[in-house]
Amino acid sequence: MVMIGSEGLREITDVGSFSLCLLLDCSKWRLTQGAYSICSNLFCNPNKKQEILEKRIGELERLEARKKLTQTEKELSTTLYEHGIDDQGFARIRSKGDQALFGGRTTIEMKKKLGIPAARLLADFLPTITIKLRILLVKSPIST
Image (cartoon, rainbow, N blue to C red; front, side, top):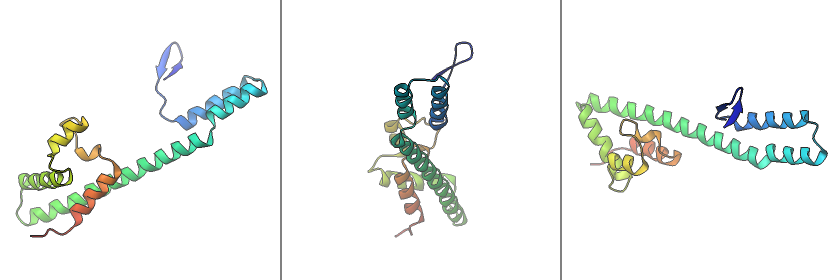
């Protein structure tokens, strides 16, 4: 949180831009060389930049995987509807798939375990690797 205006607070979402602004402020303050060096190291640490970059890349990969899962599930539902399976049947199939994926836990149990609201989708909160695994499971042929 950062103080803005007349005692207002705002949450910082873009750490990189915020760090650059602080560094520019440090240069305006005409700090001593030592203080400027500390400020520069504090806000322009290459390791921190790397962490931020890795976090953003991870978020982008997760979003791409989530989009692909949505597309794959849409293709599956289309195929199932063509074979006469209704919405409830599709929901049961997805639930059984989740149960197999999560070691016997149902979708509802997993939502409770992860603290996910009942109205939200489980996939919105899963890690990237689990989303990619679900994509593979949906695309794999069904053996009888």
